[in-house]
Image (cartoon, rainbow, N blue to C red; front, side, top):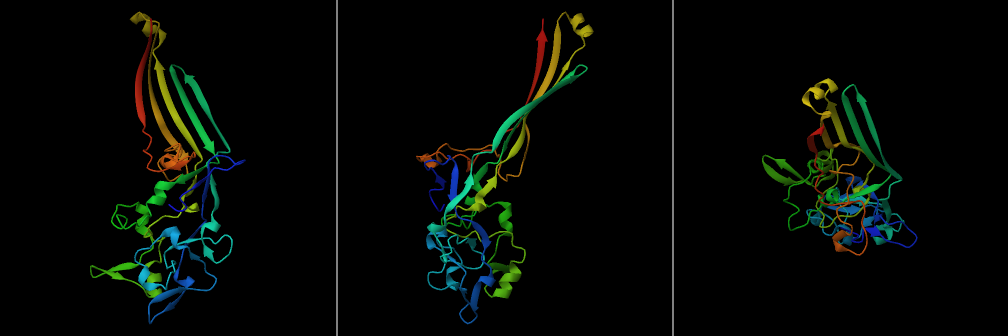
Length: 288
């Protein structure tokens, strides 16, 4: 990931600030001047290019752009924050904050006749999550990236090839490339590296029903005949549901206190987190 130091740890600032670039969609054919004689896409004046160290080589694009130009139709676009004409380390800033505005919990308990129930909720509001698993899925690194299993969303990524009569055909001409990508949902996932950007930052707010319990107590007339004082059966569900807009498995996540055994804490970092299980219990309370 670029930048490799994707968290700030700064005097007088809270722990959990995430740093990176501002995601700005992807380059389109309108960002370039196209030369049909050479099939070269050259960035128009005023359209910033990317520093070559951000995404590394972008496989499948090098033959149709000049010199050291990184940009090409479909490549992720990042904002030139300082306006100097190139996106580089000078455009990195704080893009997320793992600290919630507030957190809390509450319980609802009650009974009706011989039935009793209890619901335990927790919530968090205003915190960001760095969804590194989502970002990592866009890597096109040469060792495995072009052939790995990918998220379903990448079925709608920007494409440079079409299938014609069962054959993979490279598409270069602007109008044909536009037609091929008329319904593209996301950028080209062929970069050697992934840029840490607002693309990977998501709202981590949630409301979770942690535990739901339903019980039933036998009428006293029945338990008296059994020679006991009380007989209650109950069932509980743990991790019942979570209301959240977060696209990962679990918004209540922090894979490691220190990313890759680093020297600073990384709250709100989601990378390969195993989803939280849902469990069921059944029990009996007997009083003699």
